[in-house]
Amino acid sequence: SQKIEQNSEALNIQEGKTATLTCNYTNYSPAYLQWYRQDPGRGPVFLLLIRENEKEKRKERLKVTFDTTLKQSLFHITASQPADSATYLCALGSNTGKLIFGQGTTLQVKP
Amino acid sequence: DAGITQSPRHKVTETGTPVTLRCHQTENHRYMYWYRQDPGHGLRLIHYSYGVKDTDKGEVSDGYSVSRSKTEDFLLTLESATSSQTSVYFCAITTGSGNTIYFGEGSWLTVV
Image (cartoon, rainbow over all chains, first blue to last red; front, top):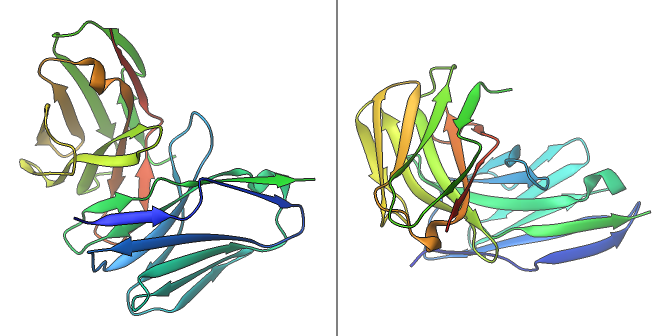
């Protein structure tokens, strides 16, 4: 069956450092991959999308890589700030519109 | 604000009763989704719709049914609620596959 794993439930880093979150998947060939941010008590908010034929995407302090051979995506937040503390979700999408999510990684950025 | 409204936002119901959650959108998006989110499981797809009267099952569809009789409304029904269906339910919408997805604020359902 399809499986998505975000390699750690929680990640603690110091302010100013780069946070790197990992999303691995098996038994799936996604057309695209997305990353979301979710704050407590709120719905997820879309951050970035990367398609299967793209290697890397950037948006301000965010960078996403997508390796379809390794079946892995890395999500980087550079110069992290306490305001970046949240849960980050990766999601795999197909051309039919179906979208499945990983369990999320909770990032805590300490001042 | 992507124009998504979920109702009710909070509900407590008894085991065995039917429950309907409503997702309403004002943006005319084609795709609509229902997810549930539980500790240790993350977001799991229940059902989704790719147009009026066009729906498909997700990974945890047992015990749930959906209907979409018009573009703006996607209804999720628990025919006979069970305690295992206590969860937070999120509706989401998108204009198409691979496009930005917008989530609602969630509906907290407790089945006692």
